[in-house]
Length: 323
Image 1: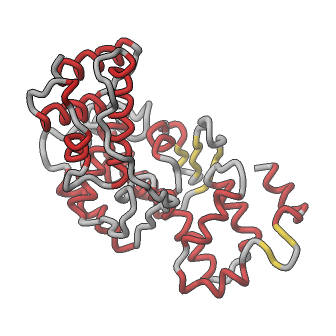
Image 2: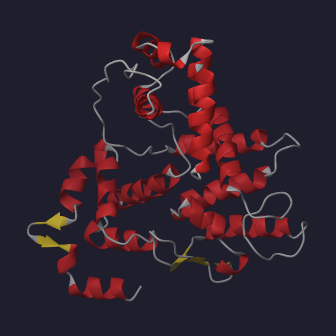
């Protein structure tokens, strides 16, 4: 049996189990192309190592491909097609805690500017105004990407400046206020939609008036980010993501409060409620992401002063329970 035949049979088996298996199929076919017309039983650990150690393979990708190949060769070992696993020794990997990317104000302006050119192609299904308004919405509200995509026209009360964010399995439903600048931007976007037809259904739509596709918008954001020149160079696993606008919203709010000497004992729980988070813990972690130049202020305004914490404030707990 050739390696290519083994790959095709293995992929067919996985799809029969209900898996899409598209990315894994591409990786296994890449191995087959790398080794040429090789038979399955003659694949060696050195050949597999040369495939894994490609010039553009990050440690994370190496580990993912290694796991895929182990499952693939285990499958054929159990069926007697090979006698040993042709795998090199597994690398020792040190898993670093994931650190969200916090955009600077300059980088956010660069992203918004790039939306003007990124959507010029007539084949783009999403126009520039929608992309720009969507990104502003994420940064201005701290909403999840999915929450923004599910937003309905009826959820936006521009007259009173209120947004209704629908619940999902992780976040609770909430009605939150927005400032005048965001109200104006959302109002202008809604007016532009009047030329497409009645303003009903999803708030953010593509050129055909349909709800946004998550995969299409992810591809669109990738193009916008690359054109803006925004990238991280700290060796982290991921480049800046759309979801990081939510983290940026939180960090920028905390930074502003510190500058104005606000009481974080009260503001952090309010921020958690605004963002729909179930507990304060996920919001407290944003303290470590604020600029280091505010460390002195953070030590003074942290959620713990002496032995008293925000949870001990009965009036505050009653206020949060009523939100």
